[in-house]
Image (cartoon, rainbow, N blue to C red; front, side, top):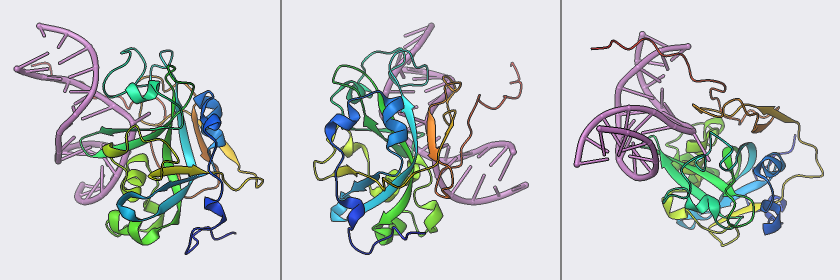
Amino acid sequence: MIDNRDPAPGPLLRTPLAPGFFERDPSVVAPELLGCVLASTAGGVLTAGRIVETEAYLGSADAGSHAATRGITKRNQVMYGPPATAYVYFTYGNHHMINLVCLPEGEAGAVLVRALEPVHGLDAMTARRHGRPLRELCNGPGKLTQALGVDLSDNGIALGSGRLSVYDGERPFAIDVAVSGRVGLSAGFELELRYYEKNSSFVSRGRTGPPAAKRATPSK
DNA sequence: GCGCCGATTGGCT
DNA sequence: GCCAATCGGCGCC
């Protein structure tokens, strides 16, 4: 097995993805992003990881998307903007999620990056993640943004600007791609738009399918 | 203006 | 496996 955790930026950070890569449907882009490398220079430190799990979020036809019914709002406007842009939002009072905007400007769509295999800047990631073990540095959407130092100040940042970049992956090496429902949704969970590297131990743990049944709430 | 709830996580049973 | 934490966005009065 290849050790991707180079002490210095190596071949994995060689070729940035062309903007045209993102100018397509999120359901096409999401599986192709597996094996590519997401890199951040937050805080002047280079941190990067191989993408091992993604989810596609579509436009108004997708009940699980932030672009489902509301139209353009202050939060989701970046989803409607130019492709190859980071859409970062804050949720659950604690966590940031990073999406990569797809489709031409004016059409809403994005790919949520859900998990990375750390490949560079492990010390910085470990410090930001309070000493957690390697496997738990980036195995979830809120964890990887913390490890990469990504927050709301990255919302709307163009990929390749120096702050955030996505590099071509290990192709021609084949990646075993698995598909499932998306994690954590209360609507749109029936769509199979989650893609992950089947053998990777760095994918998130997370609930797919309908929300767990709620106990009856005492009325009064 | 008010209240509910989330594209989650981490700690505890 | 279950559940609290935590706060901005969004729906609705």
